[in-house]
Length: 92
Image (cartoon, rainbow, N blue to C red; front, side, top):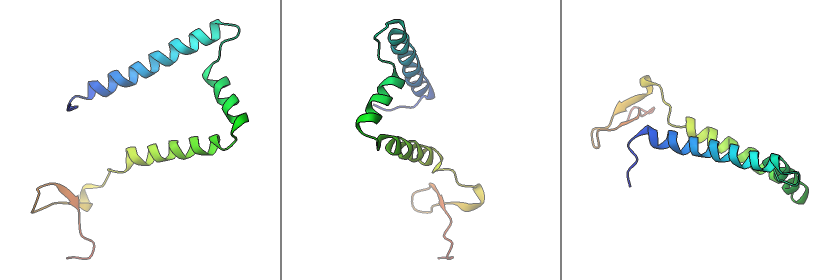
């Protein structure tokens, strides 16, 4: 399956937001419900390193989302494949 439309990602992200809101609503409407915050606290008591792992995961995602940004001055067209690639800083 090829994803060629940005609306696929918009729909997927909207689904995550809506499903989160529904689950939180159910959890908060039930006096014994388990919200995401309480679930995280429970996991953190059982395994304190989860906070570090969540931070690393967020950092990796931020790096991943911004990794492909390269200024136009540092790109050139590859003669073999035709794609934009980084210029060779060694002149070769």
